[in-house]
Image 1 (cartoon, rainbow, N blue to C red):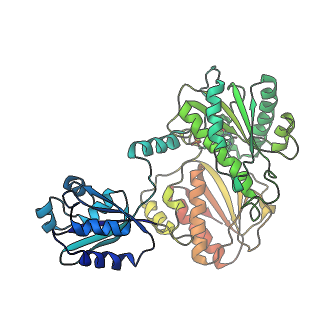
Image 2 (image 1 turned 60 degrees about the vertical axis):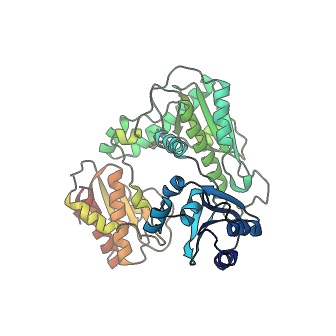
Image 3 (image 1 turned 90 degrees about the horizontal axis):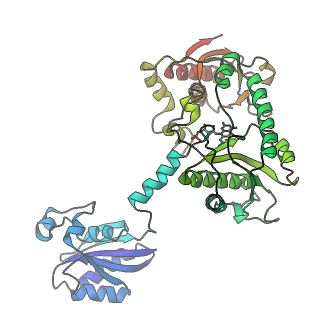
Amino acid sequence: MNLVIGVGLRTGTPYAELQDLATTALHELAGEVRLVVTITGKENEPALQQLAAQLGAELRTFSNEELAEQPVPTPSAQVEQLKGTPSVAEAAVLATGAQLLIPKRQTPNATIAIGVQRAAGYDVRDRAVVQRVIAERRDVRRGFLDLPVDDATLGRVLEAAHRAPSVGLSQPWDFLVIRDLATRRKVHDLATAQRDAFAASLPEDRRAAFDGLKIAAILDTPLNLAVTCDPGRGGRHVLGRHADPRTTMFSAAIAIQNLWLAARAEGLGVGWVSFFEPGEVAAVLDLPAHVELVGYLCVGYVDEFAAAPELVRSGWAKRRPLSWAIHHEEWGRRDTSIVDDARQAAQNAVPATGQRVHVIVGGDASQLQQSDALVVDLRADRPPADFGVLWRPARTPAEAVEFGVEIARDLALQGVGHLAVQLDENSERAESLARGLQVGASACGLTHSTT
Ligand SMILES: Cc1cc2nc3c(=O)[nH]c(=O)nc-3n(C[C@H](O)[C@H](O)[C@H](O)COP(=O)(O)O)c2cc1C
């Protein structure tokens, strides 16, 4: 740790007094003192010079104006009157950009505070740019212009992708750059077939909404990119992958996010298409069998970037509030309880319109014949994967209520307007979950019925 000592002292302070104060405090910390800092005008004080020399640290000063700007924890009106700044020792530490570890300590003639130096972040303007590109990145499916993407621009975008973090630095990705129309036509046909299959799986009212959505721009963009993952890249002993092989796919997905952000900064729209059975795309692209498709991206210049996701603008889905996603120390401990929050929200809920979902609490996959059915499986053992089955093995009735609230609110985000709940298990957990569904439904303005 690189430490900084801020010092305020009276003229003629004995060195022994300052040294004693500093050494006692430094005993509590492990680190090297790199800087001794004080107010301009005190730099020639012998005790201060001796302290800096003994510690092998640089002596630096700040003006009283610079010190007065620092938000110190223990300001002093008396110091302010004398020096024109409410703090010297603490303020000097903060003025270096260090984080305060030990607030001010005093002897009759001297004051010290100690901080730790941190690696620098970006200044406020650059931070705003980072946040802006993240907020303004969009999945783009329409409005592409018939303009070529030159190699230098594409190179910068792929360079950003290639800088992504990867498990054990395995860099499992490759980028297949596709401009050929015949290849894109074949890929487009695969997406169209999957689109039709998805549409057929939807309940009637949801299908009508889906018909208005565009899900790919394979033929509307001059450039398509297939991002792949070689799960064996790096050989047998890739650091960090041994316990969780999924990390190799995560790494390739992160590369896509880097690509997406860099493209946005270049004014290039990117649309991710996943309406594929990956093996079929791999066959069209003639990928080697050990290489897996991670993402298929349509890339091109666009007339504009929308302010919000297309699925939000079309009313298909809504963004989930961040506060629902943050749990403190243990699962379920959010800033406000999800159940209390829902009860509060119910008082001002705006009635929602949308599809009906038939939620079967305590059921199983055999009950999914109707396309509007959704089963909540409460059993301890994980059921076979099926998007129609939500596995929610609640550990307590209270947790079951929370899960119910969450399910209802999540469905509301996906455009559901009515919950028809069927209780198929006679247990406290099932009843609690059904109660949670009711609370969550009321919070979001959904109509609700129980059988
Ligand atoms: C893994 C993944 C797959 C996606 N697949 C598709 C897709 O097949 N078709 C589509 O139109 N959008 C697809 N998207 C885009 C999402 O719908 C989009 O990211 C989301 O609605 C949020 O909008 P935004 O990216 O503009 O913020 C995909 C996004 C991701 C991350």
